[in-house]
Image 1 (tube, rainbow, N blue to C red):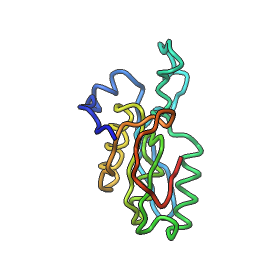
Image 2 (cartoon, rainbow, N blue to C red):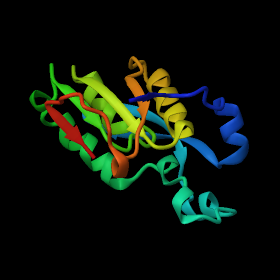
Image 3 (cartoon, one colour):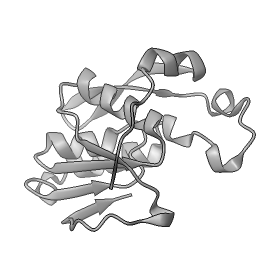
Image 4 (spheres, rainbow, N blue to C red):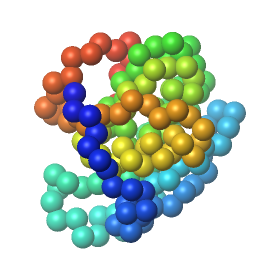
Length: 148
């Protein structure tokens, strides 16, 4: 497990990526999520498929997963949860709010910076985070639930 290196600040990321904050209703609250909403703008200037920064997008599947978990808090409450590909963090943050002990992973430390920012701006403790690539996995901890 590699700890996150010193990531760039959110303001430095906002200078490189078109970040904005949007409101997403999930369960009984509205989440403020900083993310990229324009995929075309995100991809401008990206030359290598291996390094496409898709984690800055708020995926519809992440919203659907968060909504699904909000309706089933018993699935995560008190459990050890691993979030593969944290992205901007919504599903993992919701699981954390519901009482899970969450570990967020991503292969991009800058994406984890945005996920941590989203935790702070929503009053949720920042989950433990580490850099990982599911294609080259060496983490040996056990989890009750893995969210992808």
